[in-house]
Amino acid sequence: MRAILYEDQGKVAFGEYPDPHVQEAGDAVVRVSTAAICGSDLHVIEGRLPGVRPGSVLGHEYTGEVVETGSDVRRFKNGDRVVGSFPIVCGACWYCKRDEGTNCEDLRVLGYGMFVGDLDGAQAEYVRVPNADSNLHAIDPVLSDEQAIFAGDIMSTGLYIAEKSKIRPGDTVAVIGAGPVGLFATMFALTYEPSAVYTVDLEASRLKFAEQAGAIPVDASKVNPVVEIQRVTNDRGADVVIECVGFAKTFQMALDAVRAGGTVGVIGVHTDLEVPFPLGEVWRRNITIVMGGSANVQGVWTRALDGVREGRLDPTVIITHTLPLDEGVRGYEMFRNHEALKVILKP
Ligand SMILES: [Zn+2]
Ligand SMILES: [Zn+2]
View 1 (cartoon, rainbow, N blue to C red):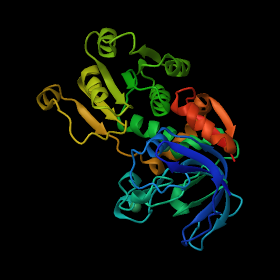
View 2 (cartoon, helix red, strand yellow; view 1 turned 180 degrees about the vertical axis):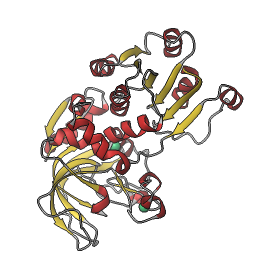
View 3 (cartoon, rainbow, N blue to C red; view 1 turned 90 degrees about the vertical axis):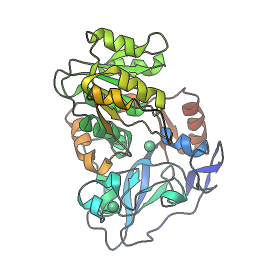
View 4 (spheres, rainbow, N blue to C red; view 1 turned 45 degrees about the horizontal axis):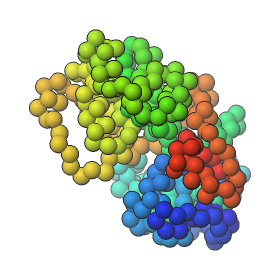
C-alpha cells in the first residue's frame, strides 16, 4: 500500500509499505478514506518521541471503511463506515471498564512508536486497529468524513477538557492557544452559553478562526493577555481558563488569568518534569486545577459527534488544505511552517 512514512529525525517520506492484516482476534483493518496531520505527529518527526521505527507509518486521525475483522469483533462488520480514536485502549482493564480509557493500563497510540505499542499509523491506504470494538466509532450516514474525523482526536479533546472544566452558563471563559485543540475547546466552551469566550494566541491567522467561531480574540503579540482578561472582568479574572499550549509559562498565565475560586483546565501537552509552582497563592485563591492528561476520547466521542449532527459546531472550519496522500510530505511542510492549520489527506 501507499503510506506516509517516518524516515528519520525531521524527515517524512511517501512510499510503499506492506498491507496490514488482522493479527489479533480483536483487530479490524480499515481502508482509510480520510486522514489528517496532527500537531502531535510533529513531535514524532522532530524526534521528540523516542522509539519510533524509521520506515514506519505515521498518523492517528482517520476515517474509513472496515474491510477485515478478527473473530472477537462484535460491533463492526465489513463495509461499516468508521472514525478511529488516536488512543488505542484495551477495553478490558479496571479503568476501561469505568469508561476511563485515558488511564488504560495498556494504552497504545497509532503511529507513535514502540513505547506505546509499536502500532503503524493511519496516513496510509489501510490501517490495522487493535480492539476495534473499543477504538472505532460508527459514522452517522448524514455526516461527511470531514465532519467526523476529528472525533477521534482533537474535537473530542476539546470537548473533554471543556466538560472537565465545568463551565456554567454566564461564565467568562479564557482559552489559551488557538491551535486545533484550542479552537475546539473554544467551540465547545461557546456551547455552554457563557457570557464570553476570550481566545488567546500569538498568531492573527489562528485568532481569525476563533473569532469566526464566536470568540473574542486576544492577540498576545499586541497585548498582555492577563491584563486584558483582568480588564474585561473588573479585575477578577476569568471564571474558567483552559490552557491548550503546554508550556510552563502558559500554565502560569492561566493561573494569573483565573479568578479566585475559578478553574484552570490543562490540556496542553506538558513535558517539563518540574516547574516552580505558586502553592500558597493557588491555595489562598482557592483555584481548582483540572489536569486533562491524554483525552478520554472514548468517553466523549458520541457527544462530540452529536454536537456536530445537531449543528452546535462545525469542525470542518479548521480544515485549510485537502491533499492527495502522495502530496502528504508537502502537507507536513505547510503544517510545520504554519502555512496550514489543518491538512486533510486523501489516500
Ligand atoms: Zn493527535
Ligand atoms: Zn484498558
